[in-house]
Image (cartoon, rainbow, N blue to C red):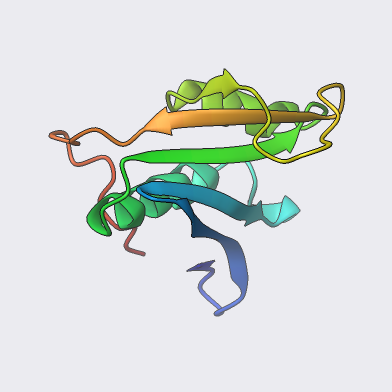
Length: 114
């Protein structure tokens, strides 16, 4: 979680183990007032780094087709489209994405620090 100077939560995210060595990002949220300052990228990098340190080798996630900002973020961070991994999802509404968590020599997956 990222908090503002007054301790108010500004951004958060979480992941779970979806399959052996596969993390699924379940939630990412940035408050409307805090959007546009790179917090989504920082939360995503922290989630990926944590998953990598816990032995995950890939990340999957799902978002809505109308969530243009999220799709742009994920695409810019190396996520590629995959078939839905959730039964009965409508591909006209949802998009599933995947990213390999190969070694990170640049350290981009390091934990976020305020």
